[in-house]
Length: 224
Image 1 (tube, rainbow, N blue to C red):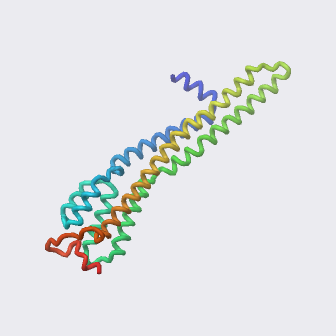
Image 2 (cartoon, one colour):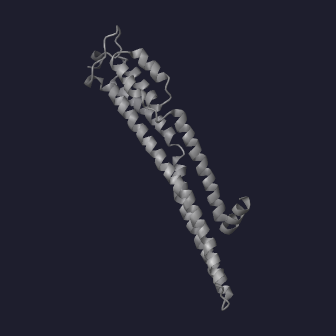
C-alpha cells in the first residue's frame, strides 16, 4: 500500500503532494466540525416544545432548569429571551437584540472553518487540472523528442500519468463539498430553530397565557 502511494506521488509530482496535504486538512476540519456539532447537540431540539409548554403555564423555574441542562445553542438563546422578558426593567426590543447577539455568536462559532472546506473543495479540482495539463505537456515533449520513432505506449503512458492528478483532485473535492453542504444545512437549521424558539417566547399571548404564580415574572402587563 505504501509502495503504491509512493508510486502515485512520483507520477503526480508536487501537485499530487499538494492535493494530499489538502485532503489531510479537509479531513481534520471535518472531524473537528463533527465533534463540535455533536458536543453542542445542534441537532437536539426535542426539548423545545416541552420548554415552551412549561413557560406558557408559568413554570418559570422548571423551564430555566431544563434549559440549563442543555448544551444546544437553541437552549442558550431561549434562556436569554425568557430571563430578559421576565424583567420589567428591560424593553422587548432590548431583549430581542440581546437574544439575536447571542444567537449570532453561536452561529459564527458553528460556521468556523467552513470557509476552509469551501476553498479546498474549489481549489482541489483546479490543482488536479493543473497537474493534468503539466503532465500532458511533458508527454508531448517526449513525443516530440522521439521523432519518427514514435512509440504509442510513450504517449498513452504520459496521458495516464497526467490524468492521475485530475482523479485525485475530484476525489478530494467531492466528499469535501458534500460535507460542506451538510454542515451549512445544519447551521441554517440551527439558525431557524433559534429564531423560531425565541419568537415563540415573545408571542406566547397567541397561545394560552402563563398562569399566575405570585410574582411579576412573565406577567403581560409590564409589556403593554
